Amino acid sequence: MTDLAQCVDASVGAACTGDLDLALCETRRDSLQLALDTGYIGLYLPPGVVCATVRNGESDAHGVFMLPRKDASMFRGRYPSNMALRTLVKYPAPGLEQPSKSVESFDEDLRQLADDMVETMRAKAGIGLAAPQVGEAVKLTVIDLSGGFDPEALIRLVNPKVEFEEGESIEEEGCLSFPEVILKVKRPSRVVVSGRDIEGNVVSIEAEGLLARCLHHEIDHLEGVLFIDKVSPLKRDMTRRKISKRIREGDW
Image 1 (spheres, one colour):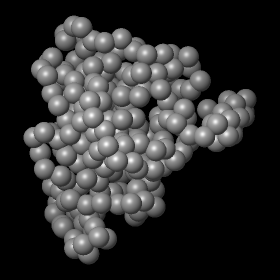
Image 2 (cartoon, rainbow, N blue to C red; image 1 turned 180 degrees about the horizontal axis):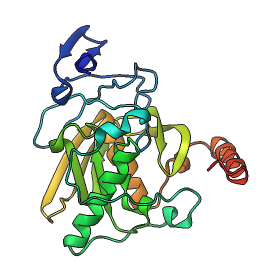
Image 3 (cartoon, rainbow, N blue to C red; image 1 turned 45 degrees about the horizontal axis):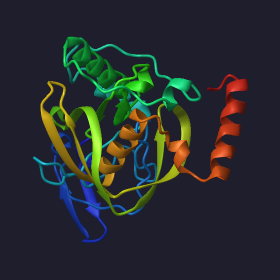
Image 4 (cartoon, helix red, strand yellow; image 1 turned 30 degrees about the vertical axis):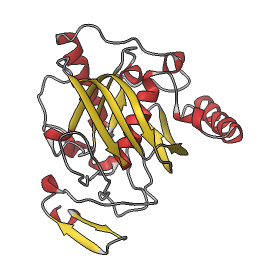
């Protein structure tokens, strides 16, 4: 798998290499097909390979790898074993379109919920998951762009808020609450997000590229906004009709 740790930025024509756990490279892709909390990132790239520019207040930009859904089992066993799988809430469940409540108690129950969300996200080979997607109407999201290979990449963000955004990016993304649905969504290319970590400490994250898109998507979930709300009325209606058909056919 070490041959996957090669990322090429077409804008500079250079490559960076390394082991999968150290797959760090600054890159830019204008056509990144993104499934935010579904099974695939970069569907047009070779299986298992994707790079994204990531920045936060404590680290430099670095690339990440995601594996296709069939390799999700590789993510397990890399974090504490007290995690449990949660049932995913699928559209059109009404709870998905309701704003979540702010977290007030940073206790063991909150930490357990976050751990369960990480396990659930990883089981689906995702990179982000919001609490309403497991039936909990609280402002908590988990994000891991490393696919479980780098414990330090795991973000557990409480009461997040977008403080600043700039730029524009239109990319394809998906959502675990919309299985096998891919939509082109316009989002800011750079964001600054404030919030608290799982212990209640104040944090600030500056992000661009993939992480910015993921944060924006998950924070939308906490406000009851779904990615289907961000496409044209025609595309939204077509998608809803396809979903209704799949529900009737038992394929949802």
